[in-house]
Image: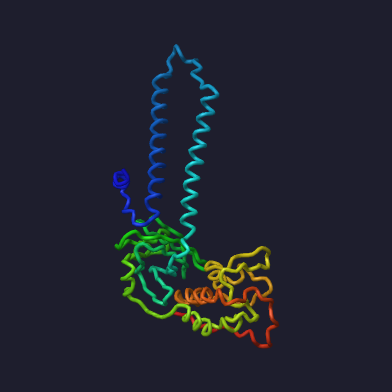
Length: 336
């Protein structure tokens, strides 16, 4: 039955662990809508024929439904809506909660190409290479405009927003090659912004096309030094002009505006691109924006560096007085 519905609707294969359940909800919603529309159309045709007017019945009042029938109709429709919402919400929460052992891969969208940075420092364009049977979480941002990362065979899609980090996860069932599309109009070559997910057995995960290797956290250490991050931030828990990177990942950051936010990939990326969006309480707002100044790999490397320091200690230290002349302006070199 599943294959019959999938063929009738022209859907691609169900290549991820969540695809089948999403399709089942799709089938039920479409079938219910078709049956409901057919019933309404049949009722209209019946009423048009049964209660058609003429001179003798011009003032005929027509039938009226009993209250209990109206109540059942309203209750049934409301119950159906709530059932769809419940199933959809559970699927949404599943898609928003990656397994603890998921592999993190950084995705950068730009006109008009997808780039991928892996935790081991490998970087590739166009081709995303992942192991079969292992959950993968994508941490995504954009260098220019809004894109949307879409893999039809996996039934996953997520907007990729400049200056912010969004995420999605999937687990591919079997080896194969699957199309990546951009589902948000992003310019003249939007239709050509394509890529591919190459799913391989775990033993064949290496040999990525167009790869550049190196340790991503080590690259982040170098980027932090070259871009001036270490003039305000430390990596050993020592208080300074800005919050230390040590223990920052996953901590709850108090905000000047009130409340707090978890220091995850989304918050850290936003802080690099738009530092004034969520100001850390206790620290002066002196950080410049790095939007357009950090390359895709540099952004991912800095996030990975901070993540690698999550167990070092530190966190929300109070502000230490800055020595005179210490607020050096970061380098203004713009990466290609």
